[in-house]
Image (tube, rainbow, N blue to C red; front, side, top):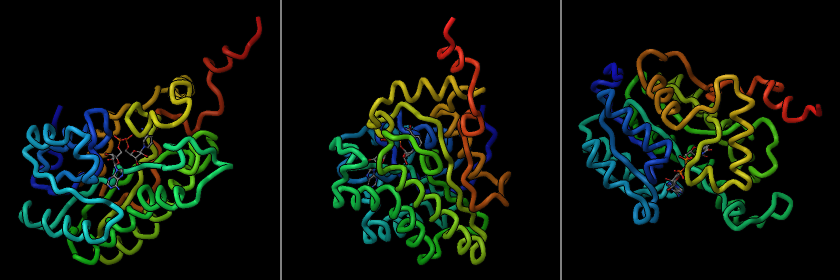
Length: 271
Ligand code: NAI
């Protein structure tokens, strides 16, 4: 069901790799709500991904950009405002990658140039994206910027590895930049802390099957899907949430406030 919540709004969507990506589902949902946007991803991801199909389906143009490159980001912001015919109303940062996780290095055996690369891609890139937008004065008043995060920023999930530290940094950047963007441009900045979701990035986490099943059994409403996340993001891009800013918003079916569930107790009860 569409409500025209984003009619006339323009934006940039980072991170649609394939149809499982949270950014992919969000792009489809934003399109259904009347928003127009430019799609972007790292040049290498475009060769592997199916982003052309999404662009066709949503009538969008694609501008490649490595989110760690200031030059690419400045070019992206300039071209996106030109293509879309004005300043932007929404931006989705849906980017994450840990080299330590990819190479199977434990948290207690990090290779620090891998750590630095993962931090640049997953966390600092959010600052870089916002600084490009801010300096170019590319956001409209009452615009909305959202990045995706995970609860390992607050609580330890051992196999989430150095992504936990990256997410803690990302959430802090949302608060800090949110202050300046709010004061000077009336733009809101939030992070959505999403349930485990079966995507390429998600499935890279060791033991993901057990992880996602446990979260589902612990959440009174069950895990939030990528589609649910797209819906929530649309609400944050809409004019219905104008005064929500500098927040880390849990979107997890209640997981983060549940101590234990009946289903989990039953698994541990000996008859
Ligand atoms: P995904 O693998 O579909 O998306 C990750 C995206 O990051 C890909 O499109 C990839 O090309 C892009 N990316 C990597 N390096 C890049 C770079 N240098 N420049 C630009 N883009 C780059 O996976 P998913 O799950 O949709 O991830 C989106 C966001 O959601 C990430 O921030 C992830 O940490 C977060 N998240 C995912 C959860 C999950 O369980 N899947 C749970 C909570 C948060």
